[in-house]
Image (cartoon, rainbow, N blue to C red; front, side):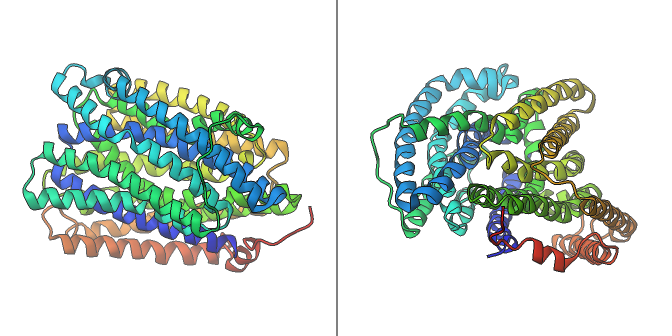
Length: 523
């Protein structure tokens, strides 16, 4: 199967998850707006989500997958099964202890880490503690889910792991629908949502567990023991846990700063949900597929294949994210209006969230390239270098956020995140290049410049067309009319960007198909 098909499998499932995510956020915007209850729920949900990225997705996609792939190559499926059982015993035990400790420390964590701006409002702070306490066990479910997802990806079974996140959004949508049907107030709705997060975590774990069994591996619990393989995993996982959660680390810093202004946390979350669509569909898909592919190529001694995989993946990333970034910049206002502006979400909210989304658009290619560059380190069992670069970007993000928030409010936090993302991208790219793990290609550089030109032309066409669609996109216009107008603008973007990109040589479909085909090559 070619890399394009694998990207499409993971990206398609992720797209489904993001579409359901949009539906969820639209319903939440209508139910909670950017009011205090929205701030409370998102603050409480951010914490288990942060730990999920730090201890689950980041650590296990970076550390577990290369080691599991090595076991498959050297010891076969039985060796990989034994290794996964060793890891499962240690992981389950550690997660149980972490969950108990965090539940007991939750009041302190809310006041000092999650939302220090709530400290002056005892009721708001206490409610955040209670909601976070309900949702925190989600971490345990998702960490085990991430481990089994890594197993499935290494075995080239991508769909079950990619489709599992859809069920978080499905269950939360069901909770919102029930709240609407029963006429629940915002407080009761927040409680329904909190319990739905926990239910979704159990459901996602069940899906990947049965996926692993279907792939031919049955995991049983082993007494936790520090075997050499487990020790090696922990050595790799600690820095990877920090690195993998870069976006979440930066966002929780932004949240802590934004908690000083009512509505700021929710505004950042609504914009984040939209830019996560291209980031998830392209960035996550490339990262998930590229890591096991690179790992197995390197373990098999196919160095030329590994270099080709890395370069072509970067090319694929830029081909799809540059127009997405330009589109988010130009169309941020109509996108927010169509998706969110109803119920408790006002026209004033649209202006604020749209300005944040436009800034996130600038940072989007950087964030997606991080997903394509980090596997180049992880596949070589180097998790320390990306961790150091992450620390640098977090320092930059924190300094800029503190400096810009008094001047630009929520926009200052978004600017800080985008700048930190691009700095991290530059450090990762230049280091791989310097080490010789990334081959410099002038043809790739030329195509990147041409893709930038095609995206710029697309942005200009959208800016020209936008005034003609203004009446259809006006705040008081019917929803179907707004959707039709936005759909026409998106169609125009597609009709301009892709033909121009191919005509001027920024992309070549034949080259993409040939170079993204994975096959054994001499190392």
